Image 1 (spheres, helix red, strand yellow):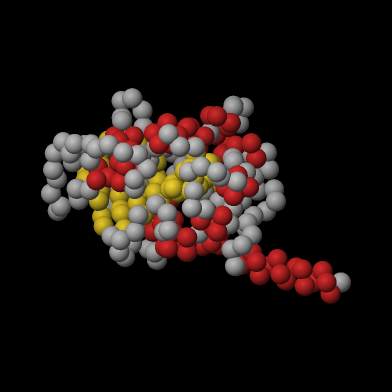
Image 2 (tube, helix red, strand yellow; image 1 turned 30 degrees about the horizontal axis):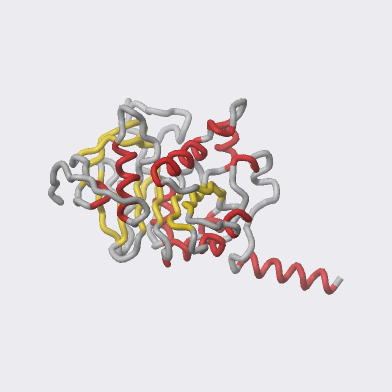
Length: 284
């Protein structure tokens, strides 16, 4: 009995220290085939990109109900990353990995997904040190940018209540709250290589009802909208980027997000070539 108690204490300490995945064993039940196995991170023999999925499993199940797993947005993003970079991309869920597993030197960048709801603040907090220390380039989309912001101490809140008579673009999500939804204009307020080859106003996919209240300390504000000031950020000294919009959700009519992704991978040295800045913008 004493030995079992000691083992339990060791496991609890290891979990708190971030050495073991913090999850219910049934959290991803039925979704295992959607993701690469964490063991594949350690088994890497060549450079790769890691797409760290922070989406709630309930939302993933809803997306693929009655469909192929390839219909999951995370799988589509994985394929797009591989197409852009020419490198393999491992899609892993953050409830299945410890942050230390992402420090493999063959992982050349970590992209962090969006999400519709939080699994737990405790699980989020386990990845804050990895984000703050940024030994590898990191790019967070939507909820991923919010996770980066919280890692640096910035609060994330709902945007505002809808005004009387104001149309809700997606009443099934956070009803009664203002949200930016669909392909919408975003103003570039600080010219940066992330927006090379793009105009001062870009059209990109939005899908959020929450926002970071300010750029995190040490970050530069790159883009804004009238309702959401913090639309794009980058760290002054570390290769950490974030967008409130979804650059990975581009289409043929709205290709600006793809250009943003290419510019990120070019900026951190994963792909090569140059884009010509088509015009300049002035920081307000």
